[in-house]
Image (cartoon, rainbow, N blue to C red; front, side, top):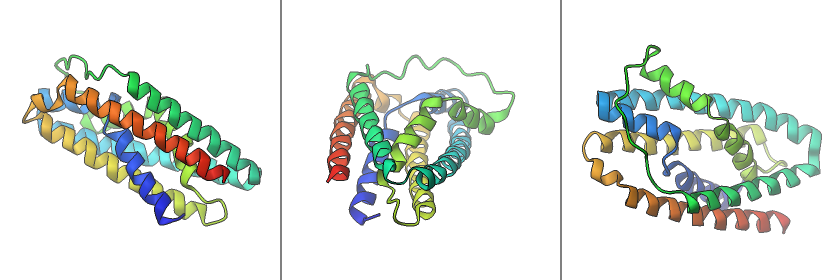
Length: 204
């Protein structure tokens, strides 16, 4: 994997994780109701969930590359199409977090709550399954590549989620629907452009 593709991957991770989803909504609600510490514990739980999903992708991707060979490029093209579709969804998103109702203290604890919310979202596994293969060179050490890409995704998501937890406890105005809508539009445009770039780069 070249440095160019790795930097493109990092930028795409930022574009995806910065837009609020189910886990971010949970972190914000708990941070507002129970304080920043609760939100940060949620973040730790989501990190374990991400690590689990990356492990699932690693096992599946190893088998896929070993059995499909050259057909793996078609899987990557399908993944690029998914990224374009995801970017379109971001462009159409209303940009609202929803009404952050008071969250009861979870019986399983904030850590496991974050883990369960992430693992219960099948879109997260679909995203990783379509996203990570775009940047893997099947001729190289794909196990090491997936581990590197997975750790990078966890680091970006952890930084983004932590920022949401810290900001929520201090300034709700920073997370206004208008600003979230702008971020969503920018991320959507970036993902569409990135998906097209990946598709054409692979076909060349």
